[in-house]
Image (tube, rainbow, N blue to C red; front, side):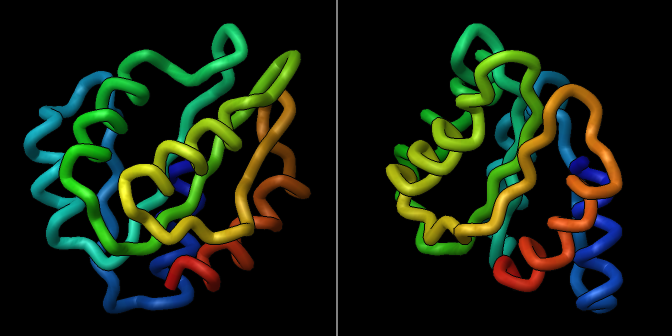
Length: 126
């Protein structure tokens, strides 16, 4: 989903630089530096045990401490309950972000219908 969102941002705003990070593998400080330089971010996580990935949760706590004033969007997938989007949106708001209403939430593997939402989410984000 992250790569599809990046592709759509490039389609709607070709001059926009888009960077995709895996929070579990990337240097947290490098990601934060890019957030400082950005106008908006999109954060995703699958629902895991009625929550989000621990790596994403820890990074969002780091983000919250910095109190940004930018736009943000949430995306994710789920298998049973699907709380990740609500959790991501709440944590992004706590961190000072203006969270767009549109989000991408898919059951298991994203479908074409899920991907079709990306266009309107990106439009709100830009």
